[in-house]
Length: 345
Image (cartoon, rainbow, N blue to C red; front, top):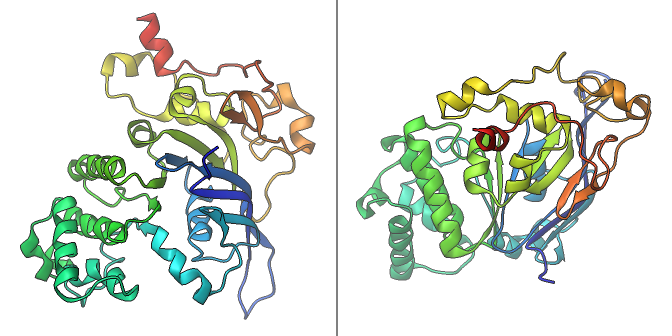
C-alpha cells in the first residue's frame, strides 16, 4: 500500500465563543471528528454549504490554526504538535492557494518577488538561478515574463490568482490546499484557472485538497468527494459513485440544487427544499446533526435523535454516516440524479 500524502484522523476544532470582555458563551463546534486521507497525485473535493467547517479543516491541516485534538500526518510524519522551527522544513511540501488573490498578495512587492520569495526563505535559490526558476514558473501558469515587475494592483483577478498558484507551486509541494480558488473570480475566468490547475496537477503530480461549494467544479476536477455538514463528513466516495448514487439525504439535496447546463434535463429535475435553517454550531443537535432538517427523519427516529451515526461502508470506497444506510442497502432516493434522467431519455 502506498503511504498517503496527507492523512487526517479524528480532527476536532472547537472555539470558545465570546471575548475577554465577556463571559464564555459556549463552545463553537467548528469541526468534530473529521477523518480522510489523500493519496499521492489524488485530488479530493471537500464540499458543503457555508459554515460546514471546510475552511477550518484546511487551516488545521496547514497548521494555521491549532487543532483541539486529532492527528495530521504529512507523508507519514505527524505534524499535529510540531513547533514552528520543526515545522518549517516540512512546509516546502504543503502549500495553499487562497480564495481572494488580492488580499493574499503583498501589495508592496512586485509579483516576481512574491513568486520567488519561497525559494529565498528556504535557501533554495538566489540570483540568476532564482530568476530563471521564477520565469519558468510564470510560463507554466500562463503569465508573460515581463509581468514579473508589476505590482498586484496592476494585474487582473485571473492574473493575480495565477500568481498565487505560481507561488504555491514554485517549491514543487507534495500537497496543495486550494480553498475556493475561483469563487472570487469572474465566471469567464474561472474555467481557465480550473483547466490550468488540472493540467498542473497532472504534470507535477501533487495531491490536492480542493475546497468548494460548487458541485460542477468538483465533478470536473476531483477523483473523490467528501461532503461536510455542520463540522462532520457525512459521505465520502469516488466522484462517479457520489454523483450517480448519492446515499446521504443531505448529499441528495445538494445534488438536486445544482444547476444542469442542459435546459431539457434541468426542466425534468425536482429540487429538494430542506426545511428550517442550519443549526448553530454553538448548540449542534444531538445524534445525527442533520436530523432536524432531514426529509427521512421519521424513518430513522428515534435513533437519529439520540445516536450519532458513524461512517459505514455502503460499497467499496463509499462511506456514509446515516442510520438508514447499510452495506448493500441504499437509502431511499429522494430525487433522481442526472445520470438517472439521462438513462431514461
